[in-house]
View (cartoon, rainbow, N blue to C red):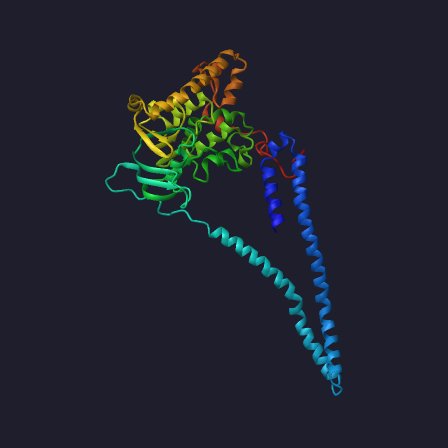
Length: 448
């Protein structure tokens, strides 16, 4: 079973990273690895087969050998012992009764060994530490207008490890937009995990009022249609669905997909780009219409102008979530002036908090953060402007579709030639063949 476990783990890694494996031409190297594990597994299986054959032969012959040896010993130990028909047939009947339990004994022993190994594995899995059910209080505090409250919070990923987040005390009012900034590894994503209750709370208290929606850095996509990924099992409300799709800049993607929002999305979003997956993940969270939104840098996977569109239409003060509490982890400097509150994190602590103007006046950790990322963002903007000036009118529609927004949104050109289709036409788009939106078909799938 150890060899089988090693082979299955290696095969899972190979299948999950098959694209990288093909690009680097590592097929033969991994083939040798899998073959080596498989050979050791075959040796064990061959040995088990030989032992099983010997055991089966022994147990099949056992009744005859037992009867023969019993009668021989009975006659040889004493001359007065006479083997007549009565004794012989009664003994054979008794041996036949014992034959079935004796044949089943090796199978029982094998099953007991397998059950013992399985129980040990289950015990190891079930003995892991459980998440604290009371780490986050979901009940609203009477007379409190804060949607999220943390008092003297100390959090760690494991109870025995050193604290990852220390001395956290913050109150976030209802309907406010809070930006969390800091250098890489400062604990921004850990702060959202603590609000979700996925970290060990060592000290302090955490309270979150209302339902929570979470958008991770790595988008999670179901193997289902685009519509099912957004609706996510809830009742479909057409007007709200259209509004969410438009706000998350998915209309151009629905135009180029073969079956619109009925297109089947592969496992892990294999037929979507990184920006498309992130926008679908954001649309799923927005469609849920929760009270609190935890957004872990969802704008990092999209282009600059698409990020501005999403911020204005979804996250910003005029977006569809303007009345909801939003905690946004971001590195986008252009979004910070519109935030109601900015939290600056350094090594797992909130070192500064306040509005954009207040933090700029202090010249502390926030000013250092701005100096670090300002030059990089300026270079990105200059390169983006240079590409837009060099592109011709013929390539503009292609660029708009690749980035997730039409050219009309990029240039704010509302002429009739560059106008996009209406929401109803895009969302109601149907392929000529109902099977077009499917990735593969069982009886017609081509491999190679």
